[in-house]
Image (cartoon, rainbow, N blue to C red; front, side, top):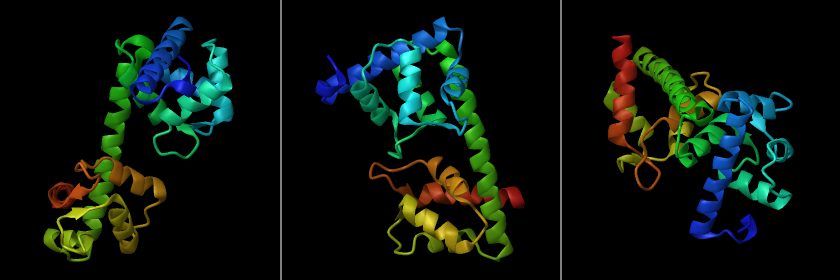
Length: 206
């Protein structure tokens, strides 16, 4: 079945099948997942454009048409920016392959998320330091983030609050701070989770 008719569960199965074929093709070429992504990234900007992604699938001889390639890209493009990041590429492959040793996907996944967690922890320490320097207690910090006092905070509210503090964080920093948080079923951050992160930052400065 092609991608155009692959709705619902069929779409999931089609996606998994194609990503397994992609991983196997990389393995046959002696490429691990990181090397493969960099090889596909023609302009070396850290993102695969639709053209680069279609070209990669053609190089791997997966036999997918443009429509199917575009559909597959849209499935992997988690943040819907029209491009494919290494993290999106890696995460979808990891979820789809039955053997994580293929193309060294399992090890790459572990290393990538460990590095991301380290970066997030360092940024939360920076945030904790900034609040300490302002003489704010953890409770005051939480009240600052949770303006309406409902005990949950959306990613947008969190990003807006961090911008207000003017810590000199760029968009990538804000993304790194928020994407490592554990979200509730409704996609928001609990006050307990945020308290844990802020406490970590404050404790690191003690």
